[in-house]
Length: 390
Image: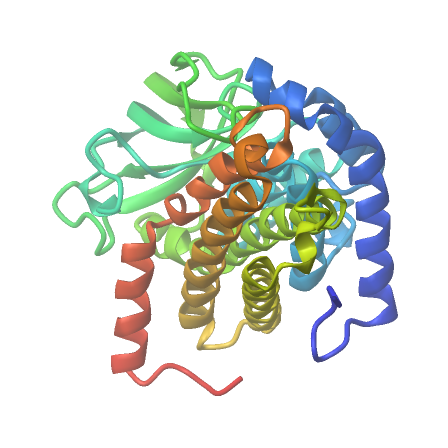
């Protein structure tokens, strides 16, 4: 079946897909099982992505980046996730962490931190969630207090992807506790080397074991005032704008892992013999595979449509980003579960990759806003009339 959209990719986008797939197949996929089994950071993937300039493809050319548009970035993440979801979090989280700087930061911040990211001087993580502030981001307690030409940050951030590996962190903190989301939250760039920054132990997770998830502790961390991203009190708005764009990258992850599971299930079904013939000849299994392929393609089309809106900055991006993330992640969970079913008992073992893919797929329904939250977001957009036709 075709892996290209109904509205065909440009030659440039097709070339990007092919280039990323070549890197992923040769230098990422061979280590995916080992990375999962040992729950270790995928250093091989990180090196391969950096060498090919796919580690943070979204960074504009003016800051030394590849200047990939939103669809090209989606293609990178999709193809890496097809091989290893943990590794796909490198380009995905680099975009998530640095996009606030790109959206709202001063020119000086952009030159310094987007340039460093593009040069491979360190990854960029995003610090919004806290122990008591998950879906309710406005419930955060991390504080930032002005002290002359500095800000002093105190608090704990939880569920921070690639924490400890990244050198740079976009941190949301209260600068006016009374106003909270209505102008009381500001965004800052914190560096791993800043005094008072430390990390908790890696979480023991169901999936994406190669991507460390840790708490970030901020103990009287002093940073220069010019490391505030945008104006004081605009942090929550920046955070929500960022998620509108980056939910599309989670959709891309979901499409990638679903495609990887479908590919493996198809190959297995053609090779596996039972009752004297290939199991792919049994209609019941054919129907399952057909549904898997149909839903993966539908998720891909929705994701690419959302990527187009992300690139153009259209008003209905909030709806399409939430819809793509929600639909694609639900599809990824269904397809990977069914891939395990196609393999039967073999699919239930770690000797075959679909078990890992199923575990990895689950997180796409949870992070960057649970799918229940995505449905709230979509409903609000529909009720407000902010939705256009495909």
